[in-house]
Structures are given as structure tokens and as C-alpha cells.
Image 1 (cartoon, rainbow, N blue to C red):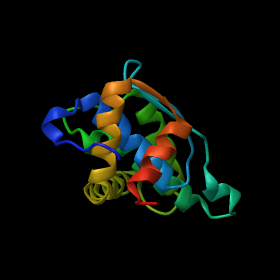
Image 2: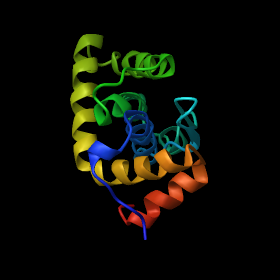
Image 3: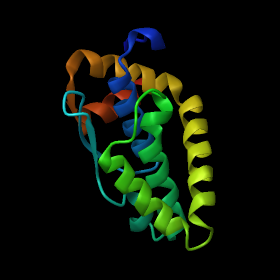
Image 4: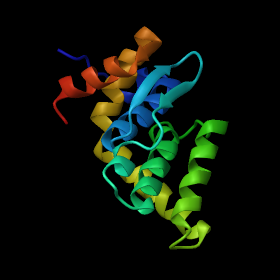
Length: 150
């Protein structure tokens, strides 16, 4: 059985990285590893959207929500350099259809909505991440699957 806890007892760093992981897996982007002490969640580039032949908008959406989900999950944290780079790529891809500022606002709203819908998974993963400090992508996927949301 997976433990759950309340937001107040989970570190912001764990919430931030768990937000990235849950978003990545939700959008078909693999997670290689996550490490709280290093402050990183390492994701697989591209994910299944390109493999399935979907257009650049789907990739842009997935990348943006992954980049912004950490801050949305832990609002007192900031975007890391890698979060900013991933968001820049998403905005570039999305800006082929819409101006970059509009895309950024839309992506932020979508990331906030994503975190609200997936709060249970994010908090569960963050609680375990606080305790373990580092996990492989396979461990992250196993935890998310054990919650029964995917």
C-alpha cells in the first residue's frame, strides 16, 4: 500500500520534482531518474508523441506542462535552468501557431490545471521521494501505477 500525506509535510523540492515526473509520464515522456538532492527529474526526450507521428503541438503541450508542473505543484519554487530550456522549446514549437506570450500563458494555466487533477499522484510520489531522495524511472512508474491512476 502506498503512503499518502498532506501537503504541509512534504518538501517543496519533492513536490516540484514529483510534478515533473507525473506530468512526463502522463504525456508519454519517459522518466530516467529523479533526485531531490540534485534537484532534477531527468526525462526522455520527445516521448511517444513523435513516435506516434503526432504534430508539433502535442510535443509542445507535453514539454510545457512537464516544465511548469514542478512550480505548479510547489508554487514557492522557481524554474530551474533545464525547466526554462524545456519551456523555451515548447514555446518555440507552439509559437508556430500562436504568439509566444499567449502560448506561455496558456501553458501555465494548463500546468496548474494538470497539478490540480493529479494532486494525489504528485503528493504520493513526493512523500516517497522525500524519504528515498533518489529513484529510477522504473521505480517512479511503479509507484504511479500502484496508485491506480494509469
